[in-house]
Image (cartoon, rainbow, N blue to C red; front, side, top):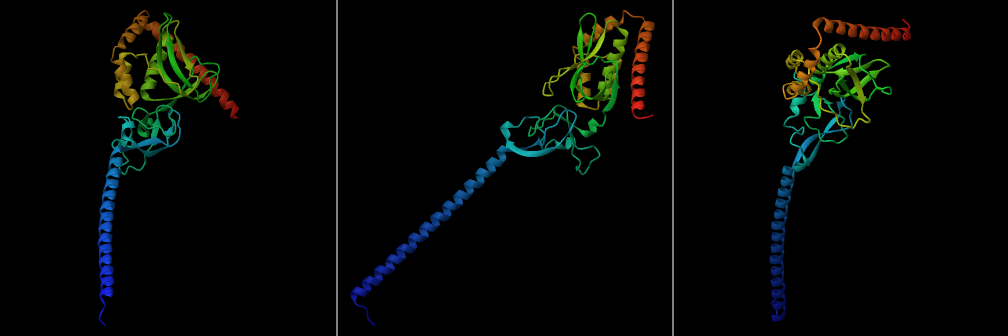
Length: 303
């Protein structure tokens, strides 16, 4: 059936409009596709930049006191806030046991009190292999604060009759204590250092070996100022298991040797026989004190 001019015009207009709409739709869809692709690319770029800007570090999962085993986890932080010596994937292998090839047993010991979520740094922690060199030692010759309790922190110092006063060990945690004795967990270098000071306290008249108590565990530790004799320095050097041990040797080889010269000048006023007698006297007193405490403990246990 033939169309009249009006019908043909309407049909052509409809087809033209449909074609225009189709073209516009295709253009819009094309623009949306291009825009979406651009948005995806920008988003991917932003995510990549963010990924680059973040650094994964190890943090304390829970608070820990000095010498306690740390519970650790990882966190991603802006790189500009991460310390240069932070524990990261780049150096975490240093904190596995030397024989742990599978790297399954990761444990760290806190060298200072650490709060939860603290970024861990190399000077805050040591691996348990280092901690394995520690020993529990009883000391009965140190003058103790009357209110000292288990878990407190102390500095052990030595004072001479001239007024000179040196820090031997700093911020040591009291593992246990009674009226006369304390128990400390010490490394080989700490044991050698303190033993050197104990012997000298026996020899030099008017010397006081004593402990000062921290008011709270958050207080910073002091630098050790006491320097042992060259023989002890050599022993420490031969047994430098931990960073602490290495620092003792470093300090002993520095200008601090002037302190050693002062102590030697005092020791030189005694003959060898006098030194031996005074050390024996000190050891006898120490042994008597420990033996009495041991007998009291055995009595309490029913032996």
